[in-house]
Length: 84
Image 1 (cartoon, rainbow, N blue to C red):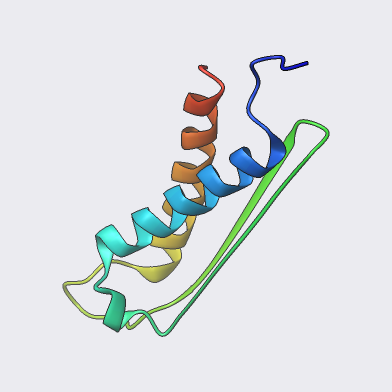
Image 2: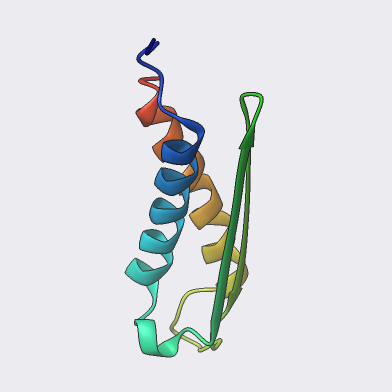
């Protein structure tokens, strides 16, 4: 019986896609040396960890800030998925 709530798999995929999408909106894919997005959703608790290795340039974005913003974007996407 469906409760209308997204499955755990849908939550994880939504968060992961949102985080990756945000990173690649800030950097060209070829500029990203390494990207690791780890998402877990257990017992209603969402955890998102984003590791980003990208070059620092004077006029480019700060990789640490982009990683933090990507995690926040992932959380927001899941909130939207739940209609919050």
